[in-house]
Image (cartoon, rainbow, N blue to C red; front, side, top):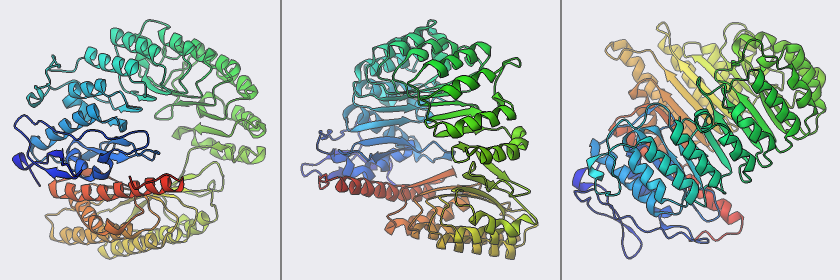
Length: 615
């Protein structure tokens, strides 16, 4: 691990190779120039591994995009609950400085994802880089939790144009305004967690009105409510480029954000996809939505989403009048609604309509846990009306029986079961090939359940996504846990259909206890055996690992880091939890190999399309 004066300095030698040098005291970078053209890939694509060695400490990564001319994305590693070590403050600052230089100078970086940890500490630097980058197509910034809380590092004071030591809302608004007005390549802006106040929201909407390239927009409801009333509706009324709109509301904006944009959405002729998160549909909002269903013939996808799946409604609101306009709508192709807007009888009536409608291809109904007792009635109605293949009822949770797994309304199943159902589990699941995604909760002392799961995993040819949540109880015997691990690992080694695999382990051990120490060591050995299977797999492309203890994460990553070298299948490995310095290096090596595989796949696709890929 290089630190201080031994750190990596990215420069370009005359021959085009990368050399390692020394950072100056001012953390000055001499980044190579961007060499991308319409028919030529930038040189950095061949050296992503070197760059990512530095970016890793800011939880960022460069990846080649599957585009004809080999463009690059700057992606976040912080989407999951990952705690990364920093080899002193220097490595993090060097990574941030590299991000700043890359965004300013490389037009080949088309997709930019900035996580909240980076924005908290270096918002001014990121805003400065974004204002200078006029080639970004997709911009996604995670604004969850508090931001603008720390001063700009003194190491970056050489940026004379930054007069403020903190990123104020005006600085942020200025950055977005410049991007929206000046970046002719921007097609996607995702800032759904960014809450804005009056002046900032007004300036942001004004900049939106001047933008002619944006196709996908994700914003917070406060943007609509805090800007001058009807300004966002005016933007929608006159916009001719936007095709996708997502609005996420909070308790303050959930009532007014929809009604203040609805008039614009009603007459907009380009938006095809609408997603409303946590928007409150009182009587006024519901009436406007009904008008949109009846009068707008451009929208193809309309989703109303609540997390959790509870509907935020005024008690007296009647949504029955949505039935007629939705039944008569001839343009909607996908529709997502909460179950609680209608009675079960109204849903049955609508299922009959869905079965006959040629335009509507998919209906998703989100049920809260308190409504699951309606599922038998709904599944029976879907089968009788012939709408079963068009409707999704979300995830089927299996506890005491498998009675509804036959319904094609469920492609995702969550299994946490005991007793008599265990013996039938493998046989029943294999009989229904419409189930393509399953999560199993497994106590490692339950050998019979482990064997049933293993029998299904080994035999299935239709399962594409598998999540295993493995845990122990204090009464579990070591020999039983060994047997359970063995059958699970062997079944995974024989499976040929799963392309996405998730593993979560929560083992209750006390390392200070001698007996528990033996058990812990044994479990680590089994985790290593699972990592060996992943490393040699020909079908698993994406893998997610989560463990409660560092020792388990270390065992998995150490083994996988050794076995993944010859694997050309794995495209993504995501780890959640706490990493120390050594474990982080193993994780970095694994991600480097996955990135290599993504690049190989990209070039294979390009070659198949007849494009020269020898650069």
